[in-house]
Length: 507
Ligand code: FAD
Ligand code: DLZ
Image (cartoon, rainbow, N blue to C red; front, side, top):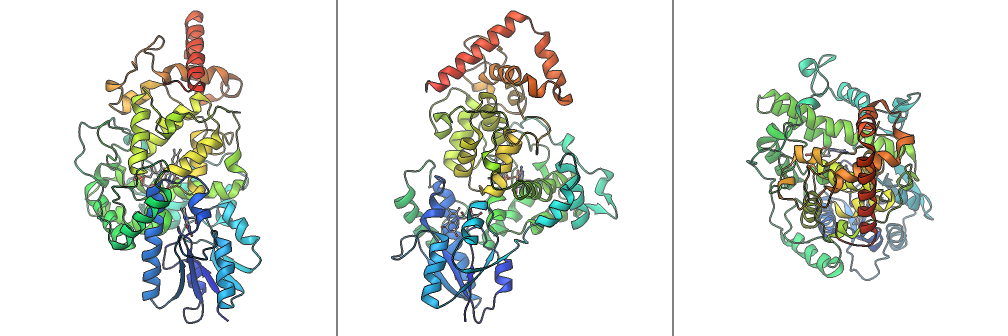
C-alpha cells in the first residue's frame, strides 16, 4: 500500500529526509497550499507568493524525477484548508494509512501532525548541522548558552575555515572588523528575477486572496526555484561578499540591501543548502576573492547564529514565543503597520519591509527591535509582527531572534544583556539621522530623539534587573552621574512620549 509523503512549503529540498525514506515507485507525495498556513499570521503577500510559486515549481520537479504527486492549489474544490485535513483527504482518496514527514519548523504544526488520526513517521530535519540531541548535549550543564562556543564546535564539525585544529587566520571571530559605519555609496545590488508563467499565476492568486494584507506584492523579484537561488548565491559571492564584513552593521537612507546576501529565505525554504552556501563563501576566500573578515562573518551567521537559534527554539519548548521576562505590555503601535512616524530610521525600516518583505539584521535588531524594547512593547505581539512581515520568517528562526535576542523576553537565554541603544548608535551606523525630524544630539526638548529619551527610561525602569549586570555598569554610572533635575526631565518627557504613542498620536 502506498504511504503519503508530506512536503511542506519550507521543505523544498530533493534530499529531504521524508523523501529519502520513501519509495518513489510506491509512495505518494502530498503538497498543499492551505488557508491555515497562509493565515496563521497575516503573512506579507510576497512571502505567500514565494512559497506557493516555489512549491508549484518544486512539485513539477519531483514529478519529472518520477514521483507521484498529489498537489492541492489554494482554490481547488475540496481543499480541506489545513495540512492535516489535506493528508486525511489524500489518505481517503488513495487508501494510504501512513504518513512520512520531515519534522516541521514550528511546534504548532508538529503537534497538529502528532495529534492527527493517522500513523505518522516523523523524520528528523537533517538539513541542519546540529540535531536536537547534539544541541541538547552541547547545552547540558552549561551555565550560559553563548553562541560563540557553539559556533566553534560547528567550525570544527564542518571544517569550514579551519587549518587543522586551528581557525583560519588563527582567530575564530573577526566581528571587531565588521562594524564600519555606512559607506557613501554601494556598488552592487541583489540579483532580481522576472516572474515566469507559474509565478505570475501565483501572483494573481495572492493578489486576489491576500491583496489587502500589509505588504506590496509587486514588483516581485525573488528567486522561486533552486536554479535561480543558486544564481543569486553566485551573484552575492562575486559582487557583495567581499564587502559584506566591513558594512554588515551599517544602514543607508538610500540603499536597502548594502552588501547583504538576501539568501535567508532560500535557505529557510530549502532551495539552498546552508553548507553549499558556506562552501561557496569559503572558496571565494581561498581564491583570494574575498577577505577573511567577510567570509568568517558570513559563515558565522549561518553555521553559528542560524543553527544556534534553532537549537534554542527546540530546547526551550512550545511556550517560548509567549515569554515576557520584562513584563512589557504596550500594544504594538500602528507605525509598525506603516502608520506615520517622524523617526526616519523606523520609517525607512518599515517602508522597506512593506515593499520588499526584507530588512537586514541591524534594521530588525537595532531599529524596530530596539524601539520596541525601549518602549516596552509586548514581545508576543512583536513576535507575530516579525513572523508576518519578513520573507524569511519561520518560527524556529524568528522567535528566538525576536523574543530572545531582540527583546530579552526569555530572561537572558540568548543575550547576555539587552540590545538597547540611544540614537547615538543609529547615527554612528547610518545616515538616517541627518534627514530626521528629530535631533539625535538632543537629549531633551521637542526635538529630542525618542531613542534617547526611551533609552534612559528603559534603564531606569529596569534598574533592579540590570544594574548588577557587569556589561551594563557603565550605562548606569552615566545615568547616575547625570544631574538629578535632568534625569527627572528625561523621565517625564519619555513618559509623555509613551503616552502619545498609546493614544495613537504620531511619534
Ligand atoms: P545576511 O546579512 O546576508 O546574512 C547571511 C545569512 O546568515 C542569512 O541569510 C541568514 O541565514 C543567516 N543569519 C544572519 N543572522 C542570523 C540570525 N540572527 N539568526 C539566524 N540566521 C541568521 N532570520 C531569518 O532567517 N528569519 C527570520 O524570521 C528572522 N527574524 C529576525 C527577527 C529579528 C528581531 C532579528 C533581530 C533577526 C531576525 N533574523 C531572521 C536574522 C537576520 O536578521 C536575517 O537572517 C537576515 O537579516 C536575513 O537577511 P540576509 O539573507 O540578507 O542576511
Ligand atoms: C508559510 C507557509 C505558507 C504561507 N503557506 C504554506 C502552505 O500553504 N502550505 C505549506 O505546506 N506550507 C506553507 N507555509 C510553510 C509552513 O507554514 C511551515 O512549514 C511551518 O510554519 C513550519 O515551519
